[in-house]
Length: 424
Ligand SMILES: CC(=O)N[C@H]1[C@@H](OP(=O)(O)OP(=O)(O)OC[C@H]2O[C@@H](n3ccc(=O)[nH]c3=O)[C@H](O)[C@@H]2O)O[C@H](CO)[C@@H](O)[C@@H]1O
Ligand SMILES: C=C(OP(=O)(O)O)C(=O)O
Image (cartoon, rainbow, N blue to C red; front, top):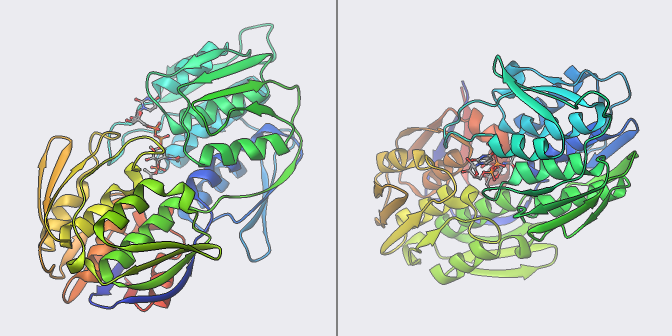
């Protein structure tokens, strides 16, 4: 099993190019199921999750190809398509649930495995089922699968008003895709506003969908009978960008994070600036300058839905707080069990205590390298950041979690001057 070996203490300098967003690419791959015409995506990140989604689509009968050097991927979901997502593929990636809406909307039936538990919390799909049921689907859970179909005599979903109990990102995406082919108007209230959603909506509009209000909490969709093919560029990954901002802030240095969009990272950038990091917009990205964590002031923050502080940046910013000056309070409000990185940071010498949804972090002047284990995607990134500042060698095990969602992270860090290598 691959591990990352990091020798801490190097500052980071130079430029890094941010890849396309995992959380935009995954729904956008599923959107290709909505049409029998070819769909071409650019800037698709090279990630394990993208590979898994591609395999899932191929399992259904979608013809896929890669092209060019800048993440070009083509998808052709011409009939016949088998509208099924088996457990073996779904179990490693929750985003497979995003196949449900498009399959149901285009074929009138679908069978998608329930995603199962996950290291960061239980992650139910009740809202997905509730919303699609409101659009006229009949969904039963049988043998671990969501089996969905339209009632006899119906060939299309029907528009509906859907107000979810909480803001759900993939839920909003599933309803958005399904509503494009439904009969009549769908109104999504309490919709998620994460930048990946307007990016998906822009792609759907290129396919002929009629959508208004994307990027706000109220999205209105007029269903159309058919969608056509399109070419679309996946938006830059704000979480990958935020991870590099935190890495430079902690390790110290001066890096231009290219393709990063500051308007997608306002909550994180505000905290970095309050901590004492210099963050400016430059050219096609964000420049970050830091004298290293010891000169920074730890920050309290609380994760919330976009545009609030993203839960997907909580672990990485906590690594920074662990070596900054002073005490801080980190509150996780989105997922019930997203502090798995804390024990591992403590193994590196961090002083952190958990009290329910809150982690109390007391900054320490120095971490010391150790063997640590990654437990989920962002926990892995947090341990890498901690390894960059720790004294001596840090060996991060189970980095298959990191490979799910970061495109060549160690190569990118090495190009910035980090001493990091992949070992068996
Ligand atoms: C592939 C993808 O885009 N993943 C992102 C997406 O996950 P995902 O879309 O799975 O997360 P949600 O926004 O749906 O989850 C938000 C909260 O709602 C709860 N919930 C959600 C749906 C449901 O049917 N029932 C329910 O109870 C969840 O357990 C969680 O507590 O948004 C999360 C929150 O920004 C991010 O951390 C993930 O990186
Ligand atoms: C939790 C995440 O992803 P997923 O929803 O794919 O598990 C993440 O990207 O941090």
